[in-house]
Amino acid sequence: IQEEALAKISACADAKELNDLRVFYLGKKGPIQAAMKSMKTMAPEERKTFGQVSNKTKQEIGQAIEEKKAYLEEKALNERLLAEDIDISLPGNRLPVGSVHPLTRVKEDLEELFLGMGYKVAEGPEVESDHFNFELMNLPKGHPARDMQDTFYIDENTLMRTHTSPVQAHVMLEAKGKGPIKVICPGKTYRRDDDDATHSHQFMQCEGLVIDKNITMGDLKGTLDVFAKKMFGEKREIRLRPSYFPFTEPSVEVDISCANCGGKGCAMCKGTGWIEVLGAGMVNPHVLEMCGFDPKEYQGFAFGIGLERVAMLKYDIDNIRDFYNNDLRFLEQFERKE
Ligand code: FA5
Image 1 (tube, rainbow, N blue to C red):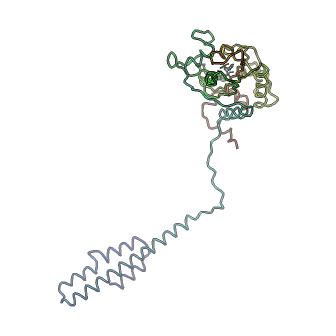
Image 2: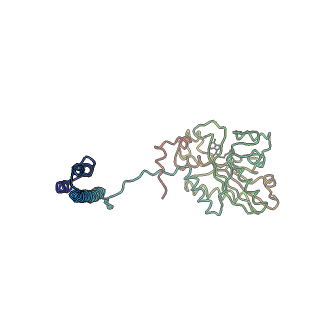
Image 3: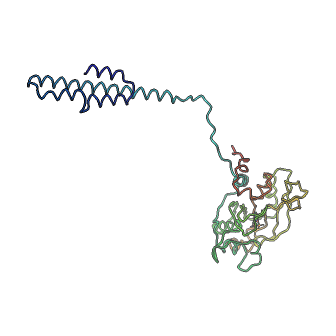
């Protein structure tokens, strides 16, 4: 039996076959067990020897099976490792990588530009109080200029901020009447405007605020000039139009020549050749006062840039909705910055 078993174990080539052999030779219905049953009728001496031989046979077959099992397992592992061999010199598969959203890109470009001019970046809440969004901006309840910014109200005193200007008030109050202040505040803003090619009910602005002694309109104009040249290149023109904002006096609206039609007039610029990108002005002395600054000692200028408008000019995009539709064909055009 042992010879036959060992020969079969040695010839066996896979784990299942080996297990069948184990069950056959070492199991209850196997030939060894059958032989051991005949021990009952043997003389005691003979039974002893027979028992010893049987046990030894069982043990040796068991051991041969274990050894073969270990050998087969190792063989299988080696074969698998060989099959999975990785050639590290082969070129890798390129994983799809997203691109930076054009609005994020414009925001980062603005941050880089103004950080380079010594500004800090400040943030404020998108859900804002009426007090900060309007009252501290010189727009008390019932002020007609509130109509300029159609508002999503949450309750009587809480709203979705309509501009980034309330961050000005947060920064000034934190400074407790002590200048200088030089900050930009980029972020999301919300208005109940009808969506069209250049208006969205949710858009982004970047506020700028400078407070110091002896700040003039010349400083504002110089700063906007640097902004326009760095963002759009030397060729793009800007124009300042007198305007009105309750929080600045005097106030201006700043337009940049339309990239789409080169100033001739098209649908994007509504035939004017110019696109309004920001509002600005000298901080109204009343705002300075309400936010803890003495207007006799300090002056300041502020501006509020519409980020979508900047991105549209920069990348020749003719519909503001493209920023918010998440169409990959649009987004893929903006490759990742190195
Ligand atoms: C303001 O929001 C002022 N807070 C800006 C300001 C700041 C003036 C500091 C003076 C001093 P205005 O409502 O004009 O101003 O908006 C500023 C810019 O936001 C606009 O020039 C435009 O580029 C952008 N904008 C306004 N409404 C929308 C809209 N619905 N969709 C897209 N962009 C918009």
